[in-house]
Amino acid sequence: MRADTGEMPLTPGQAIALERDALRIAARVLGELATGPVRAQPELLGSVLDELRALLACESAVAAERVASARGASSLRVLAASGASSARYERGADFAPESGAANEALRTRRPACGVANYGDDLLPAIALPLCSREELLGMLVLSGRAEAFDETDCEALVPFAQAAGDLLLGFRRAALRARAEEDLIRSQRHLRRGAPLDGLTGLANRPSSLRALEDAAARSHAAGLPLAVIVVDIDHAKQLADRVGAAGFDEALARTARAVHDTVRPSDWTGRWGIDSFVLALLGCDADSAAIVAERVRLRVEGASFPVWGGAEVSLTLSAGVASTSLAREEGASVASRALRAVEEAKRAGRNRVCVSRPARA
Image (cartoon, rainbow, N blue to C red; front, side, top):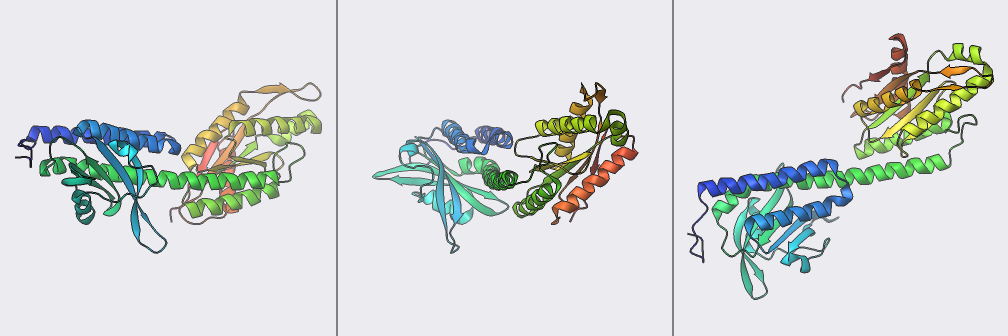
């Protein structure tokens, strides 16, 4: 029997249904986490609490994250609150477990049931520890149901608690990644503002680009983020220069530079690398994603033809090489050298294509 209420425990079928519905909530949110912006995560977590309250017929729900101080002590910080708890807790406030269930869950790292003390009221409560790989990341407490929780509720919610721990770990990693990417972008913008430009193309010159690559490689490695470098080279550049002359060739270079720059993200670095080649640094991008960008650049140039000085009609193609940082620390110049070797491979294979240099794993 359920304590204090005379209600029967969950039947096996009800327990299975509760487990299934709770996991459905977790699966939906994990999917949204993978595609949604970091700034939407508090609202996303709030929606989880709303759905759980409805599923368990509770008045209140609080999700808190475990945070460590500089001295190693830990506390719980509110991430989201729902229902009656919304007026009690603000996001970022300290969360002091008000129930024996929460303290038991903190101790055992398993869901626990009991009561929560809200002033003069003792309300049925259930606490779900949020763990990932045995690390306690936070706590989720639901309370204010008409009947008491019991062990069948706890057992049914064990899989959800495990999935929610992975969800919270995903929140944490996404936030760290977002902060690291913002730091990288700020650094690149600072370098871009002070970079000497190539007079013909308006892009950063080679020395500036090399400094940007070194900075991005060092910061990406420190943050555990990938960095991809693309080098693109105009095919048959010497023959083109002989055919259209110096003025026509300069115009072709300038148009190519604009096409390259306009195809990538504003946060990506673009610079002139050689007489007829350009370099791109893509922050937070792996080799496969960068190859898609390189192919987009190649197709944009291949699909355009234009007149140059003297009236000649010019159609260009590009060969592109892609390289990305490996798990090991690698300097920006080294990544660019591998991208350049991939360009040479593309030219040997017939030009007008993209080749990828795959780094050795650390």
